[in-house]
Amino acid sequence: MPRGDGLLTHELDPLDRGPQDACGVFGVWGPDEEVAKLTYFGLYALQHRGQESAGIAVSDGSNIVVYKDMGLVSQVFTEASLESLRGHVAIGHTRYSTTGASCWENAQPTFRSTATGGIALAHNGNLTNTADITKRIEELASTTGELPFGSSSATSDTDLLTQLLATHSDLPLEHAAMLELPHVRGAFSLVFMNETTLFAARDPQGIRPLVLGRLERGWVVASETAALDIVGASFIREVEPGEIIAIDEHGLRSHKFAEPAPKGCLFEYVYLARPDTSIAGRSVQAARMEIGRRLAREHAADADLVIPVPESGRYAAIGYAQESGIPFAEGLVKNSYVGRTFIQPSQTIRQLGIRLKLNPLREVISGQRLVVVDDSIVRGNTQRALIRMLREAGAASVHVRISSPPVKWPCFYGIDFATRAELIANGLDNDEICRSIGADSLGYLDLESLVEATNLPKDNLCRACFDGIYPVTVPEPGLLSSPMFEIPLV
Image 1 (tube, rainbow, N blue to C red):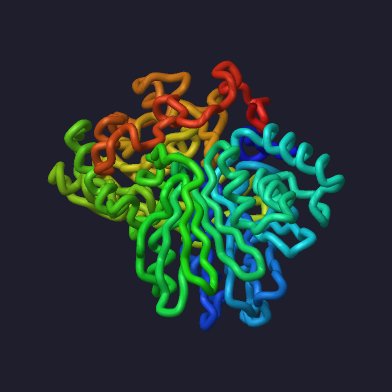
Image 2 (tube, rainbow, N blue to C red):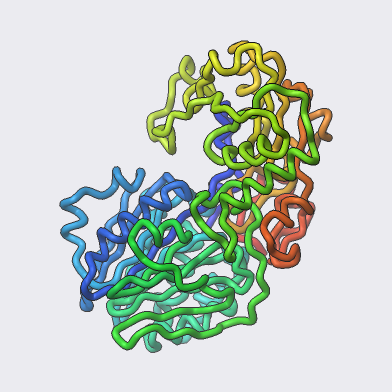
């Protein structure tokens, strides 16, 4: 049964990783393309969305081969392994677990064989009715007398979804998806395939992003437009909420399996997406700079320098500096190679905390009154250690400015936030948080200002982590604060 191991059962980590997205997905159909290599580079562009495992599935028209392992994209694949993945259709995935344990079995793409062929599937998001899906699979199995061929020790909602589609071995995969996806709840941006066809689908709310691109001799689907740019594909449009796309030798077909009710994730603009990505026609970089300008108007500071917490605070900090007239400077150097590591630091190294990721430029910040711009505060551990480090480096004062409202609610749609009990803004007001992290002042961006910076209507955005209004059914409110709560959600 799928569990929320990544979502709700954190150990308090001095490094306080901050919010993580569930994953990035990529798919390509191209008879004259090196589809495995294109998928590799697409996943490389989406590495920020998941640093735990990576995988690629490829079909040559007769057989599907899946290659996946734990680690970064560049660690999982070699030139030799990519050369061995020959075909005309491929899907890929890079994962950070929010549902299911962090293990090889839960790496994606998932695969199921049926009497008529195979299904490989990759998923960005989180399903909220896994109990209903399990019951549906059991009902379908009782009519056929058997479960889909093949066994799995995976515990992810993605594997459950793959199994659900595989129960319809008597139907074309396209028809099975049209039949079953209307009953799936939660956030799901999918790329999946059989031996001949690439499919993409997005939940009716469109919570997680998914875009369609065109190659000279094929098609691409990806989590972000930046991945299209990397492989030389031109952006065509977003996959619409409630839409299934099928691509094969006959071209591209589109079906609507549910009425769209758009609720795109607001946090994509704040943190998750690359700055060189566009969402709903809005450049993420431009949105973040506007966010910074609004933050400066709402929370001015008497300071000498504006510095970002790299990388996600950079463009908001530039906007803040432009609006306030306070000079912008790079005061922190980020170690680009600190990602998801499988080598646990010793206690001595762990005590160094944030220095594994960031180191101050003493010559820049010594004696200066600083405005430090960051994207969010989750537990507060990172900001507390950062402020201490800046003061030790000689900062005269530290004014923290956050380019989003306080995060008060957990996400059930694919972002790995802490439990509500662990979120610092859930139990403390602004002044108390300021004292807790040791800042001279603290300012959060207003929710309405954040929404306006996206150029989208408020009702078209999921804001649940900020206001607790969930667009798709989640657990009873009393369970949201329980650190023991696990999905499946009912």
